[in-house]
Length: 69
Image (cartoon, rainbow, N blue to C red; front, side, top):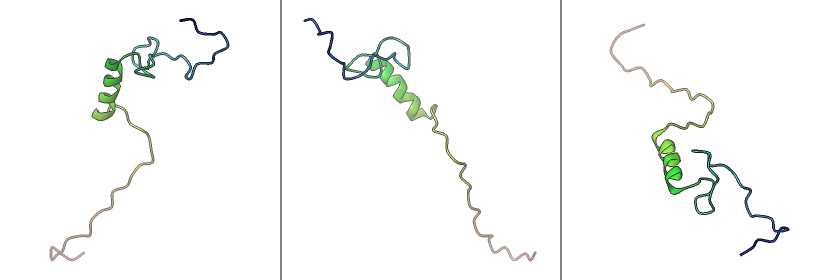
């Protein structure tokens, strides 16, 4: 089946972010289910981190030890 020259694809062609091969429609933006799973594993294992503002941990109230300051 020939694709008309004036037909615009739904998504632009992109390289797989894992291996650089052309992406497939089934695994977009990846080239395969394997590369998709590798990326998911990196997110779940904490390899990828989205930067944000530092979070300050509040200190708990001092315990009553009987000592005076």
